[in-house]
Image (cartoon, rainbow, N blue to C red; front, side, top):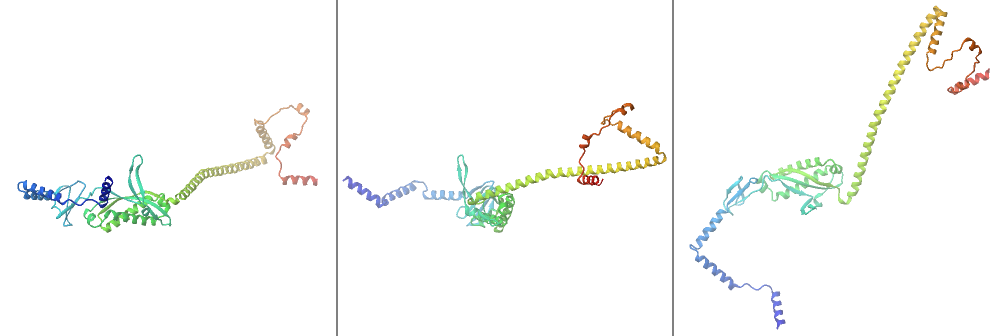
Amino acid sequence: MNWDWEKLQEQKRRQGPPPPDFGRIGDEFKRLVDFKSRIPGGPKIIALAVAVLWLASGIYIVEPDETGVVQRFGAYAYSTGPGPHYHLPYPIETVQTPKVSQVRRVEVGFRTVGTREGQGQQFRDVPEESLMLTGDENIVDVQFIVQYQINDPINYLFRLDNPDETLKNAAEAAMREVIGNDKIDSALTDGKVEIQIASMALLQRMMDKYESGIDVVAVQLQDVHPPRDVIDAFKDVASAREDRVRLVNEAEAYRNDILPKARGLAAAMENQAEAYKDQSVLKARGEASRFAALAAEYAKAPEITRERLYLENMETILKNPAMDKIILSDEALKQAVPYLPLEAGSRRAPRSEAEAGKTVRQEGGN
């Protein structure tokens, strides 16, 4: 018997839930009717309470950063500012209160999926939005955000079916156009500011053309990098370019260091040569003038002039401190043996080959 009872319960569970108990439902309805009959005034009081609640549902409050937009039977009726207001209850009138001073954002190329403790925000890449073609036929992964405000709540609510999605699609199209007119080197290095400015201006023109009621505040590039499959190759290229720039800078520094020194040395040598030339010319002119004066004096008194020249030369020789002097009397001079300083002659500077050959020819002729 136990086995048969368990089998029966299993069959009932397979057949589904039991049918509703209409008798119990009828009892509940009778109790509700009896409750209404015990209230003074009965259905009139209930209807009046429902009417009061319906009329009170038209009270609404607009916050300081909001604008109230009232619709009558779905069409725009009027706008209200901050504070408490009243509109005809639904379904006659409804109200929407968009935040016109709030700066909103749209993410393109990635999505924020949440925050983990100790790891910060977590993001998910959306490659179908971020991969773009540059003007030099390279592919670059561009992730950016668009910040915007509502400057016309009426156009924002009624001109576009989904203004946020429209803005995202327009931002992606604007960025693709700007990236398509630029090169990958500019997008990866020093051209990001120009790309942000150009895409922001283009996006604002598109939103104005749509009469979207949106004011684009900023377009900010979050991450720009080559596709992950070729990012290592791009890193190698970037490293090679950095090495090239470094070597060029080192060469420029060496050139800037050596050229001024060479120019200064050349200028110094030119100045020395000019000074030597002026000194030699002036000395030669002085010697020539002196010789001409001596020649005139010699023509007048040869003996006296010869004696004076001898005495002056001997005075110059004897005053030279670098010369050794030996003074001998006449008697000693007669007994001294003259000698030829052969060592001094051998230490003279060698003559040129032409002079040596000329001397040999002369000796052979003699």
